[in-house]
Image 1 (cartoon, one colour):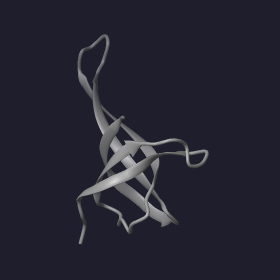
Image 2 (cartoon, rainbow, N blue to C red):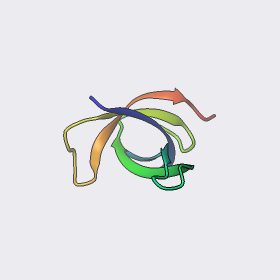
Image 3 (tube, rainbow, N blue to C red):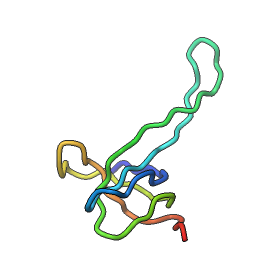
Length: 78
């Protein structure tokens, strides 16, 4: 089961949040570390605010874009 941690950037939809996940990759030629970001739509039943850090877990597809679920809120924004 895949998991990842990211920051909530949008909570405007019902039962869905958009989470931005940051990872670092090494450039194949120049060997410099690059910061790469990707946004995922995640299913949630609880109220999660923008700016919170959450842990995502992979699930069976809920809709066309939702393949992740919010497992827990790591750090909550006040």
